[in-house]
Image (cartoon, rainbow, N blue to C red; front, side):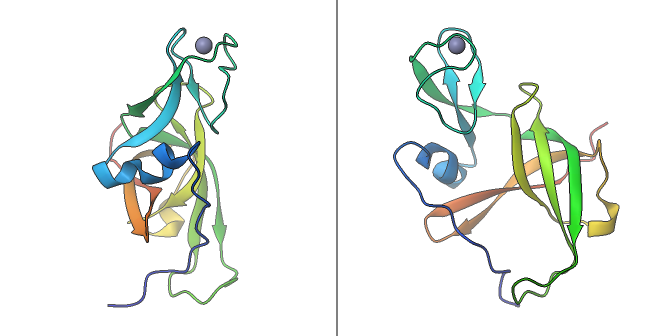
Length: 138
Ligand SMILES: [Zn+2]
């Protein structure tokens, strides 16, 4: 089996570990405001919707839509999987709740704006990177 592609790993902090390590339980987790229900990403100590500080960690469904993407053909790092798709995915739970991620498990050329996707996790050390694959949903 080929080595998995090189990835730069995030720095995990107490403020973001729910996000980077939720994949261990198969959960894509964000902070959510207990007062107004706004999902918050990237992590912030204050709700941007109502300015309160009572936040909790909660999991989303993991389903979303490709908002935009680019195909990377440039082998910036040694990796066997060029080209690959770098995408912004908006999660179903909230308009504007977006991640920059990779679309995997399909030909890069098949990625399209509006494509329905679902999260999968790729473990690297103690980090579970949220990636997305086509879900086939309408
Ligand atoms: Zn709020």
